[in-house]
Image 1 (cartoon, rainbow, N blue to C red):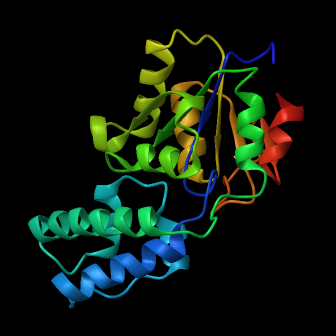
Image 2 (image 1 turned 180 degrees about the vertical axis):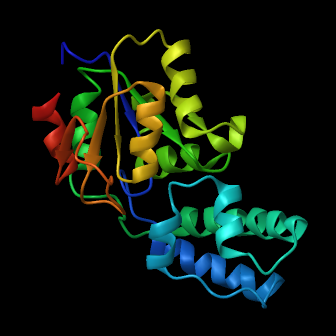
Image 3 (image 1 turned 135 degrees about the horizontal axis):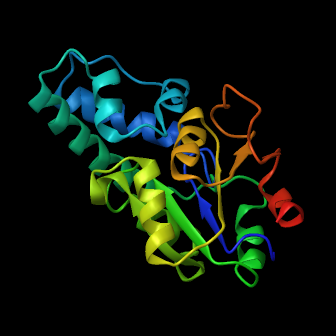
Length: 211
């Protein structure tokens, strides 16, 4: 634990997999509000999660005007959070919660995501990890890219050598831009286009031995 002074985490595809629940919630919202928009699937969402909410809206709700895309995304996020709060099925990846509780004793933990405001708080509440996470940041709060939000967390917490765990090309790119080593969660939704990352993990629990 001497090498790194902070572990920054992605959420979707790294901590848990919400895509089935979210797809169902979004499709209900689409049917209720803009039925001309095609339904989404869990697999479609796996290819979108990790992007900022405005980019996802452009990709999935392209038949709508800019104002309607924004409105539908806002409604989808409300429906999604309601569905996740009501969910009683464990959707975290194996070993995540146990590993986070052990890592908490050894290294400061942070979360940076491209999600909407309130989502990280929901993740922490549902998984009982609010007390483990020292700081968070997201696109919904700042309107900034993941790279910029990583830099914000690094700066305000005085980190000298943090590391980031994520699962997509976008996560890899953000880490490159922020100058932070990237650990690829290979069990998640995507993969970097290059093998030029710090480490690869097949399960979350492998972080303990790597760090």
